Each structure stands twice: as C-alpha cells, then as structure tokens.
Length: 198
Image (tube, rainbow, N blue to C red; front, side, top):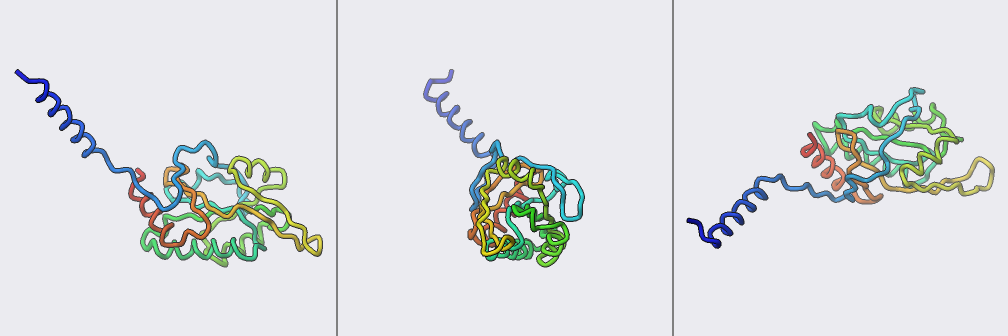
C-alpha cells in the first residue's frame, strides 16, 4: 500500500522524466517572433518579372529585407553580410534564400534589381511591389519607409526599417534580426533553425 509521500515522490519523478524527454526550446541571438500574426507572406513580381510568393521558398531558411538599390549604407551592408552568412553556413549555404523587397519602386526597375542581386549573389531574389502594392505590404510587415526629398527630383533618399525577418524551412516566421547584430549571430541562428525545423 502506497503512502501519500511515496505517491508524491513517484509523481514528481514522472514530471521530471517528462521534462527530461521534452526537446529543449532552441535559443536565438535574434528576436524570437514565432507565432506572430504579421509578416506572413506576399505575392509580388520578382526581378525576373515572375509572380512569386514567399511560400515558393519552402525548404530553405528565408532572410527577408526591405531596402532600395540607391541606399548608401544599410542596404549594401546587409546584402554583403548575407553573402558572408551564406559562406559561413558552408555546406548548408544553399539552404539560405536572401529576399530583398524594394521600398523605391519608382527607381528600382526589375533590370536594376537583377543587376543589384547578381552583384552580391545570383541566387538572391528581389521583389518589386507596385506603388499601389507597397503600402499594403509595408503594413503587413510592420515596416517603416519614407521618402526624403533631395536636391533634385530623382536624388531623394528613402528612410526605412533596417532589420530582417527570418523564416524557417516550412515558411513560418521565426525571427527578427536587428541591423548590426553581426554575421556570426545570424549564421548560428540559421543553423539552429535548420536543426530544429522538421
């Protein structure tokens, strides 16, 4: 006949056994936004003139960034860092898909964006929302952009959000990587996602 204290010990042991058998939740350097109800996807025209969706990249970890080709610092830095992240991933480098969405469709033509992508990595893909599509996409992804007038009508700049969204291989939004977080941290986060996504 079990005493109450023995039952308690056995119940406690069972709980610890269940916890021990449960897989540990992965930890990330980036902000974990798993389950967020925004930035779920889009269907836009890519730099090759094809209508595509984020779901087309299932099987790869997608890093999505908003910017524009005439950006003087943040955009080329981010793109260069993504090239380095791909290199750091080694054999898993082909499982990374960099996606660039322009916030300057007036100047960023498909041809210009294609050349811009090739300059960094020919596997990177750029999307060109129309002037009508851009506000809705920005709202869905909670990104900021604003035109800043230049000395001439075509010399304006664009203020914009600088972080990147990271999706796992099943197309689920998982992380928000802050600008300047570093290539090592992002590469490690991507490796963690690759190991922990079915």
